[in-house]
Length: 297
Image (cartoon, rainbow, N blue to C red; front, top):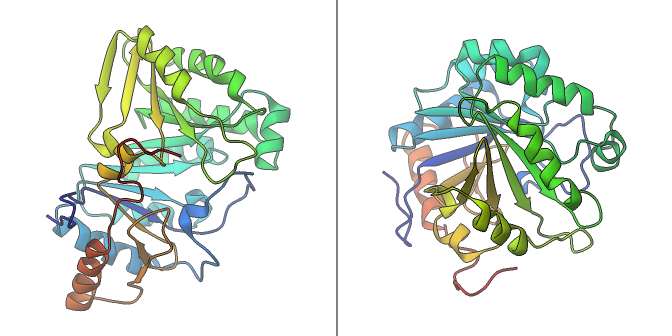
């Protein structure tokens, strides 16, 4: 297994398969990609995934842009090594069309972006009128058993912070016998205009929760409230950084040891020993962006 100099094992791979997207969200960080070049081929993507699998990586998350824009996305999933979990982050716009096929080729579950239940707010955030299609996509993903589904809600001051309880209540309809849909609240960084601290909200959920689960990835806490579950993602906190077990790959074939740092290792076109050495070099470059446990945003 790959372990960096801070003792953090690499268990998760997050690989972008395209920089293209049919939306233009006001907060999008583009997976840390700047001026991304041509997307990797299917063969290049699978070669990288196989090496990380051989190194003991357990889970892979497919991202974009919007992964479902790629015409060969089903082939990419079908040819993946036998990871413990293959998941995808999607805006959900095309999910109702492809949910069952995604399940058939080997996708285990999805994260779907859902920042609001208000059509006009949705258009403001994404630049498109697509809320109903996304809600249909979530239903389809649930019916296709691409679960547990995580609904990614980026909380923004003056935009959608008042909708947290509404979206949490929306998840309950899918959780009659078990937790199939989890609300994942994401603290926005790098956009001071919309920044909204999740400190107070997390304390409220902590006091209400019947069960608290601490996940290994980033030491995230998930609060179980009866037939609802909420998880907090705060990427500018020391615990998040010190427990990071993820390596990112950009759509044009660069390893990105940290989302917040402009440090990359180009692995495009590499095979065999060259690829192995490049991956090891990227692991050596890994460093927590925030190290002080008392430091946050």
